[in-house]
View (cartoon, rainbow, N blue to C red):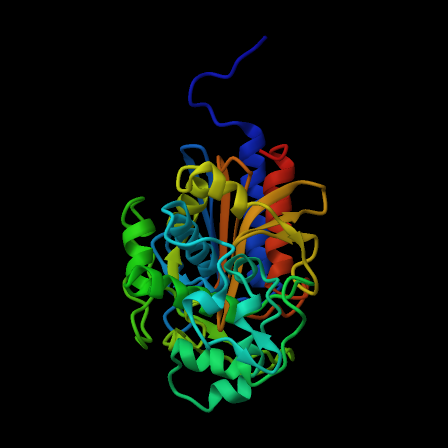
Length: 367
């Protein structure tokens, strides 16, 4: 059998990268996004692609080192910390919220004595999502975790704990508060000491307090504030007080860091086997990402071609991201756009991401 010479590029991979780059280009030329970039990781091999700009004022291109707000991908980091505390015997996933935060989850049929930590992490708590009340959030310049929970408690519970599934950012705010109560340290410090420093993530952090800046090299973030008309005004949302989402979506990272983190997590190099099994035990979702299931801070998505990939997505004003890969973590793809709209060709950035991931994983035989 004929074998390729050592280090000769695999034509299948080269073709996949070319098709991937074409979609990046179309996302800008047809979709109207300011900029998009991606890193593909196959074992030790990496590929970087980009289109559009990092800054519409200067025309600067997006670079592999650029950092961006990762939104709900933050939940994976928070769930990982919680599972590490579980592995150390410092808490149990079956502990109730009331045990660690007495009286915090209470009112309008919310009852912390009936909600477990597991329910928080897999979104079966029934706790109202604080970010669904934008009017209440906008009445405050900064947002403490306690305030976010109080906003949620002013609304009826979505359902009886454990009886259904609904995505709620309040779940992870409460989870972050429990981590701080158990550990005695700020959540940002726990993430640094337990995850980012040990595995060498140099561009990943949860801002302390209400710091609105992105430290280090970064792209500008552009938003139309959910308006869908093509001529809607564009706002620069790069400086943003992320206390509004905190543990549910306030982190900052980079392409390389996200691929490295999820590759290690999927590959079983961060959590012990029991906690790994807990994290990747998934449930069907409702009114969320199509063809997705949800575990503890992670999700699986079945692509149109039938391939199932694992990871998480996140969206915040002016920054949408996807990080997904194979279950063994050997093949990862992270994509970010620095705008939160698409003018044509796709319904939203998730449509762009789905096409990119389908191109990557179907062409490589789901590897």
